[in-house]
Length: 65
Image (cartoon, rainbow, N blue to C red):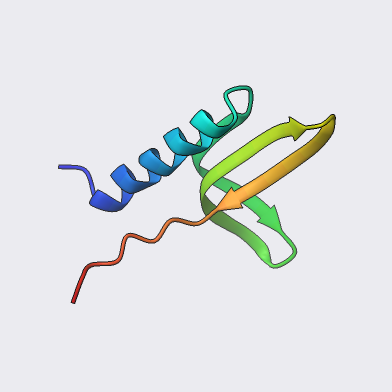
């Protein structure tokens, strides 16, 4: 059985793709930052009005109390 967090991550990626069908969307990617490597839930790379954009989305699937 898949973790519900992974299902939520895929749902967020599908929404991002629906908002920008031409964007390159990846899930579960490792990104190198100034403090080392970290896993990012959803990575979006695309262009808006000719400008390149790189967006990182962290997904939180909190359980209700």
